Image 1 (tube, rainbow, N blue to C red):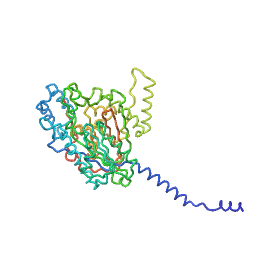
Image 2: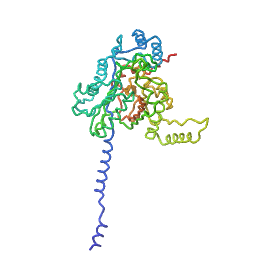
Image 3: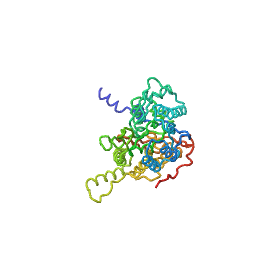
Image 4: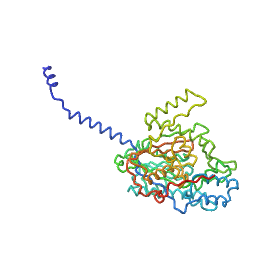
Length: 447
């Protein structure tokens, strides 16, 4: 009897349909489970200051001499730095710094925050017909101005966000804080499914001018200008259809355990008690070390295998066969991994140094140079103005990969890699639309 049953089972036809259905269901489940881990950038907006807030280089120099806060040597030093900074005549400062004497009050900084962030949040939400009640996560970063109530509380009060919104206000993180905020949003979106995150990046400069005579602290007076960005992120699967970009990688590097890196950008009192941010002479060297550490982690994630092998062999060769005339370590060709580069516009020297370290061409740094020329160093929001420039130029195509590189006090180097998943419309209004036809321009180099 048992033999007959076994024979019957062996001879019975195998039903493929249940097996196929089970396999399909498992495949679909894994696919959608993995897809839900993506972070989508729905859209972003950059603040465009009014024309009456422009500070031409000649106007900046005139204020130095008329303000009466600096001696002749300090005024002439700032004049020389300003003329060599790579910043043009369209960069803007808040109204408080147009006054003589400037108004460095707490109230002036509050008004600057409202002037920058309120309109770009309003524009971003209304453009996509998103109710403030739909925002689940709110993150702001502003390094040197940390009011109470916080900046996120100001935004919540203005727009009426939900009482259970998850809000975070970051300060003291430097110019790299914009990508740090994206990193925090990414981690939160991993935990909180089907959520929208709003990230706000800016630096308030109204109350952060330096009035002393230490030259390493005077440099920041000449570089920073007003600006800000609002970025809308989502982990909702259906938002992929309307999103501009998808976050592929985010790599953070913190060199704070090294004393020279830690003190390369630092806020402190000078000998006369004036508070300012000091930029050390070793800053570019520190930034170069941080960048090399960062790309050693980023490279394996983005570079073709052949480029990785060539780079790895170069490192081994340099360590094992040290000679007086040794060759430099092979620098990977990052243009095989990215179509566009958004280098933090910290200054002309910063952009030059990154281009040199990565063996990039001048055209690869065009967005960064033009951002610096038109808007100045807007701190953590600079990489968003650069992406905005690329969109306005019609340079970003579907499938393109963008590398944002940011540097900040600590010392930190952060990288974000985005992939374009839609076709950006160059006719869409943004912070560059009114003058994009005039760019690129040849930036003057002072003797």
